[in-house]
Image (cartoon, rainbow, N blue to C red; front, side, top):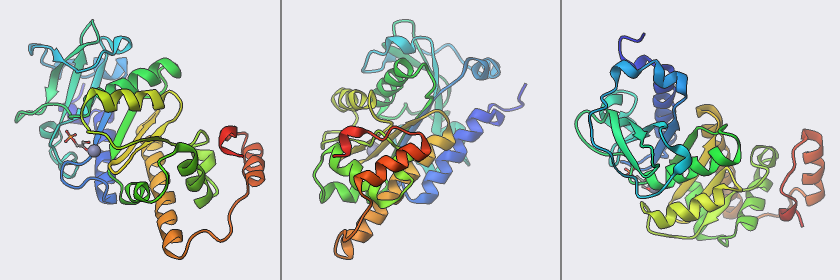
Length: 274
Ligand code: 13P
Ligand code: ZN
């Protein structure tokens, strides 16, 4: 039993990841949001700290397969820079009701507030991932990394084009995101429309770039999800530098990518290798 809920390893890991993202420069002001689908045994360890008296309110999306699940979520308008030092003021644990249409806050946001405005996108992405890969993915992470946003002003907003360019920038990229990255055209954030567009792409990809806005990543744990964001952003940074030096003059061939896939026993999306 913990003296304080913030001693729970899943909350510590979450706060550490938020701080790492902030230090990377991916979370200006309240930019970005992070949600974690809490394991049964983890929520059981903190039940003494939960307040089950609040009313359920609509999510703005239906996520039937997430009914009765608990999530650790960042607060809307809250700053990532404050999550590690003032966790209970800036994040919340929410519970999804039996219909999968409503949620309530059961812990956190002690000075008021509500979950991230991107809650529909996060929960719909969690829903798709839970269905698709047997509940292995637990983390959905949205950030505003500079270079990944910058490239969406210059290159065609096509998954195949952007994925191939990012793969070319660092040899290990196609091993880390072999399916490529999805691309969502510019849309108003925070609503059901962008949530639906994102979750459609999350059926295929673990990372999606929102044009002129940011990146969404999905993963099994905090390290892998953060690592995916970091890898995509680093590849995008190299792309910006290469473009600034006059553009690609030589690169890795598609045959090279195929050999790489064989050597690492990874299927690199064949539709993107022609
Ligand atoms: P929130 O503060 O509501 O999480 O919004 C930040 C953001 O990045 C929206 O896309
Ligand atoms: Zn955003």
